[in-house]
Image (tube, rainbow, N blue to C red; front, side):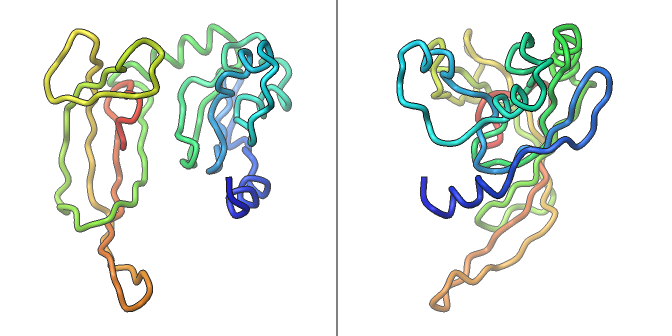
Length: 193
């Protein structure tokens, strides 16, 4: 991790956006992991600690009452460089209820603001694809337009909310589009990408 990433990471910390008796809404800053990947395995194997923290570790430090809840109650993930709102359940029953709402098409809505290179059709669209891990526990995902036995369906709608041209230096420019992307249903790993 470069110095600029280290500075961003040390300056930005998770924060609580809202809280009820059942859940906590957390602002996850960029350059933070959602969960502590391999934390238990690392401790068992006495590997050197990895750089950086996770929202899960932050929750366990600031909310010791979440110790008995899987992943400190977190019910979804965001990529390391992605910032956004995450939900953490305060107990196992609340976690199950939130997961059910996420799986429902009428439950929790997940919207993302995405910046992409290029001019994107201003009308927006929808896609339906199928996502499958290459093998159990794999972080690699295969994407297909056809259903397969191991694949999970993934649907998104998107619309362009702004287009502009950025200067990249040396007189070069690049068109960029800001999109609003909404996951329909539970979502799948790497679906927004």
